[in-house]
Image (cartoon, rainbow over all chains, first blue to last red; front, side):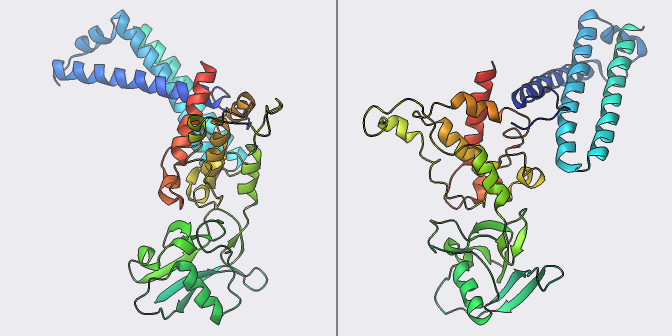
Length: 116
Length: 234
């Protein structure tokens, strides 16, 4: 058993499952957005955007996708970092930047979704 | 034929270099790469490489030939030197001891780690533990591994984390004992593999399958281990 305190779930299976399910959420969100954009054309107004994103189901779906993105990105970038960044200090600094960025995305996303 | 061989003698060379040697091959015969190395060694005794059975059974002469790992003794020169030049290097990713001889320590350490032996505390019923032909058939494609390290040293995940990722060879062997109906340590074996490195560093690029001189499929075995870990966790 190889342990690492910074991995997402400390277990390979947990990380693997989270990576797959978060990918499904991201794929579903992409499909919804592409279909909506295809139906509503390219000449969109702010009111149209707000009307679409402001619906309760879309707010929940968007928040779910942002959380999925954060988990997905953390597992992926943690894996890349442990492959290629061999100096512990460099790796921790890089992962620190990733963690702060993802945290900002989540908080900022919530503020956009429920702040208007 | 022009043959380029990786040379490094830590006692005399500051750094490794490629040595070009012109070798005259007999007409009308397709030699194996090992035969070519033997021809070079006849002229220059200082060239070092491992070899033993010369028929693809012992797994000693795993080398990198024109960019692809394989056993020198069963790889025809015509198959790898398609451009007319043969390039022989040691297996990638392992420390070079001398010329084509690499230090396999970390590879064997991972093999040792998966406990490559039958674990069964129940006394055997008769003289031996019997298996049905169906159960025995589950070990086909797994037990044939000769530990030549061609697969693990062609795997980038093993290059980056050789101390943590078990590697295709070790995982093929791990599944050989997980699939064995006579083994009772399935839970302990799986518990030791359920971390983000040991199994899950496999990204399924299948270099291992592409180079295995015995035609085995470590990626498939890793998939089975992943399935077992998944059903254990859910």
